[in-house]
Length: 291
Image 1: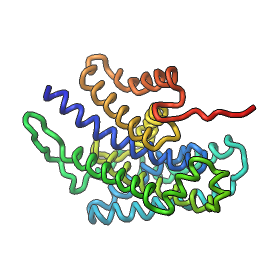
Image 2: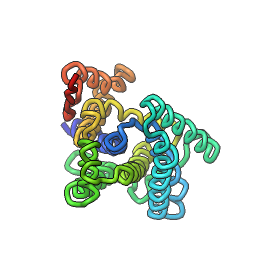
Image 3: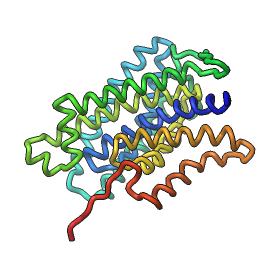
């Protein structure tokens, strides 16, 4: 039982990281209608910035990363994506893929391709013992901060003017325009929030295995099954899907270790099942089209 609780806790911590990554994807998708393939690179760059500045102060590293990534995300939206407004979806997606490749090349030139230090900072390497279960403090920090961020996002969407504007724009772009909502501001804010979420995900992803490396991009893309499971356009779905993927990976690695890396495919098996039974995802909704 203690082993199950230990694995469940670790799965929840990893699930929180995937939930934050998924929320970044959904924020951009709901405002722009685009799957931003550059978002995993934002996560990786955030981790590299924090890891480089941790020796000079963890707080300063996070602050610099927040400013840099929010600015980078907004610049990408204004300078590149906004100029592609009205183009085909294929063109816009290829543009985000181009941003992803460019970002990875810049990181390789700046920091090399070998793994670097951790973003762990003051989260520590100790454990919190609850009965016979040892809970790493890193996991406790990840879950706690993630819950706080989710609560702040909820309050933002429910209680603020800009949050309500984002919700209206996400539900129906044309109706939001008719109500006088500035869609350019909506998209700018959405990309900025996605940049901030990328920093949180990057810090936690770099602390969970205690290393920062280029393969973080592939790890961040592992949020794709979470998005499909939860429902691609749903913020709540991104959270539930992320938690599901984290639990599947960790519980699978704990109980199916004798079968090698079979746990890696479990999220994709769950994704295929959801696509078969409910193609729109657990929290998604099918939009009927009049012909």
